[in-house]
Image (cartoon, rainbow, N blue to C red; front, side, top):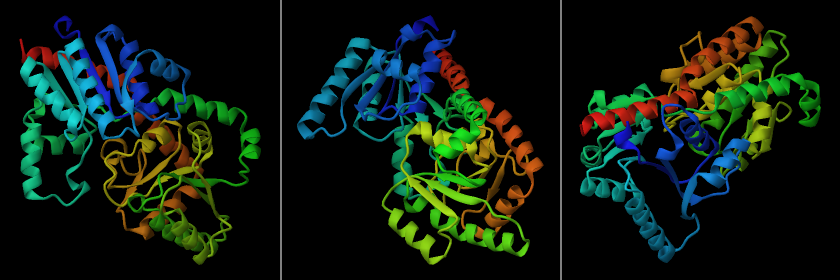
Length: 391
């Protein structure tokens, strides 16, 4: 590994999970932090939830520019990125996908200076209807990469379909700081009544989190929830509330649908919340639901819910389900538009505490394999593979 002692990994900007991954790499015995240059193309002032992440941002992340830069400033940012490559002279470059000027610059620079490139890849073939000519262009771009770091099974499959050899792809890219969500759960539960009072939570509840846009499927979730309420009524069961955290262009339409369905007494939309408060809601949820209906490449909040010991229901369009959810064992899946099945799973979990406990425990054990520590191990494996390619 000593040959490859200069590595650049960059993302457009750093969310908490990016920071946690890099922090795990820099803390690991396998990859020394002195060998890694973590680069952020933009600074977005994201809400980070760990002091070690704040420290990482201040100390170790190299920022190229601002998100609101004009065309002239963007040109300067590109020049700065090129200068960074020339100064660091990385032996390995990790890029987030193949599109965008920075990925193309990285590929060209690597070809000129005989460096190894690794694409961080989390796209599934079935995310969209694929067009033949676009797939040809993608194959050409993928053919310029040496290695792949895929989210999971479906991402590896698509990357291979685009021409990359299986033996040059590793999985485990899509990870979060499991320990953080586990600790938050423990802290929240230890002062549960205080948090319930602070957040005005009186009943058990289903939770869903996401930007309020069409692909997230909140309208279908509401349809399923109304069916769930009718099932509870028929069986004289007190229903769970439904809390949907997030904001976005569909918020008003979702609010209108809640009103027209006459379920306003059961559905709560607190809006956009900080990561800490969102994590508190997640820790108190009885069941987490991911109702996406298309183009959900992974769904990291599934990792977060499992790490917090919360049983998960997710549509099988979510990339994470193929690696994290074994139906009836580590969680439940359903077809994205099948609101009746979703409603029945919601009912099944809401009335069976033993089932919720068993699913939560198995889910927690499964997501342990998708930790940021595993990200660091897989990252190191890629460096070793890069070394083998040019040996």
